[in-house]
Structure formats: structure tokens, C-alpha cells
Figure (tube, one colour):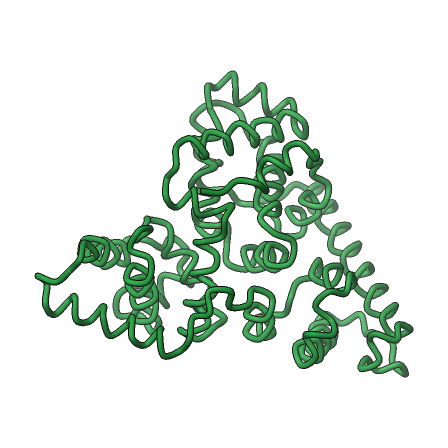
Length: 342
């Protein structure tokens, strides 16, 4: 249970975000770029009314994406989160389809998967990955809401298995890695199978993330070194505390990043992080890691409890996003992490 002081901090944080959101959207009423907003009404403080206004706003943005996609105010608006229902339209627009994966190709790949399963002798090395996927689906999800939907027999378990198996067919050089189930499941929460596959493929093959999924040890070492620098710059006390416990960021960072935080954090927070990541790039992931560490650090008492917190972190959504905005991200670290690629 939260202390009275922590409750007050949380309350102040919520009030701040609500006021900031209200002022921002009201400010858009006077901007020629946002003429679709109703000029005659002030935003109601009611949360449902705020969500309704945001949903309408994002729907209008989606309809004229070419006009608004490069507007700086869109990035600012993302701070408040893209409404759950709007992500179905907005996420595919942001990510695009750089690999030009057609629906026909997607269906052909799915058919090839079935042929491999039926005729095992023509597996081309992919059958092992398919077997691992089937094994993982029964043991992956810790969050009850995801487990009920995606566990074997759940309403979206077939779609999840199909996405992962089809990707193994599409990119056998990458195949399947434990943790991919979390990424695909979050996408399927918002999107149909085809758009899920497009974004999933784009994420896994993103130049700064691909070395992680290929388990390139040299590049992983560079990532760990740069993240250690970020810890030392932003939370020096925690840096030395972890050093004292002999905990290196390799003990926890890989699991955080390989699942894009979809395993350690609840789906609502993950959605907010991904909103920003899709717009602003992978730097959001490293900043999220630092923000998460900062919020957890006050509870680091000993080696055992620290390892437990790093594996099963519990944080307030607004506090995490506020801390993310405050992370110091030096140019030299940014340049190294943004230039990583195979």
C-alpha cells in the first residue's frame, strides 16, 4: 500500500498531466492546422470527455495523415497517449510498410508454414523454430489479461502462433527468439493479423534492434556499455549501488529490450511507451530503462530484493512517463546507440 506521501505525489502528478493535456488541446483550437477541433467548446475536465476529444482528434489526424505526420504538435500530443481504439489506425500509419509486405505475400507465407508442418521432411531448418513457438505459447504470459487471450485455446492464440511462425518463414535467418511472443501479443491487442505482421517484422528488423535479435555479442556489449554510462549520468547513486551488488545491466536490460518492455511492464504502460517509440525512435527504449531504474532504485535494499524488482518491476504509469521526459541523453551516447546496425 502506498504511503500518504506517495499518494500525494501520485495525485499531484495526475493533476499536472490533466491540466497540461487540457491546456495543450485547448491551445490547438487557435491553431490553423487543427481547424477540425470544435472552437466553440472548452474541454471538459471529465476524464471520459478528455478521452472522447482525443479519440476524435486522432481520427481526424489519421484521415489526413500526410498533412499532419511531420507536425511537431503531433509528437507533443503523443505524450498524452494515443487512445486505445485509435492505435488500430495510427500505429500502421506511423510505422508504414517499408518492406512492402503485401497481403498476398503474407498469405503465401502462412500457407508455406502449414506445408512445413504437414510435410516435416521439407522443413528447411524452420521446423525447430516452429516447435519452440508452440512450446513457449503455453508458458509465456504472466499478466492474466494476456494469458486469458493468448494462451493455447484462447481467442487470439491461433493468430499469435501464426504471426510468429510466418515470421520464421519470412526471415529464417532470424527465426524465433523467446520474448517475441510478448511483442506480437501487444500488437494483436490493437491490430488485425496482417498489420500486426507488418509492424512486427518492421520492429524486429529495425537496424538498432536487429543485432539484439541476432544475439550479436559484440554489439550487445556496446549497448550494455552505453547504458551503463546513462545510469552513471542520470542516477549515479544507483550506478554504484548496482556495482556494489555486482549487478551488471546485462542481468536485466536484455530481457527488457528484447520484449520492448512488454514482459516486465503491464500492457497499458507498454502501449504508451510504444506510442512514443514509433514516433521518436529507439532512444525511447533506453530512456525508459533509465526512468524505470530511477523509480525502482529507492526500493533496492539488498542483492536478492534488487534482482526481484528488476525482473518484476511495478511502477506508476504517469510517474514513469514523467521520468522518461527528464532523462539526460548525451549526444555521444545517442550517436553510438542510433548508429548500431549489423
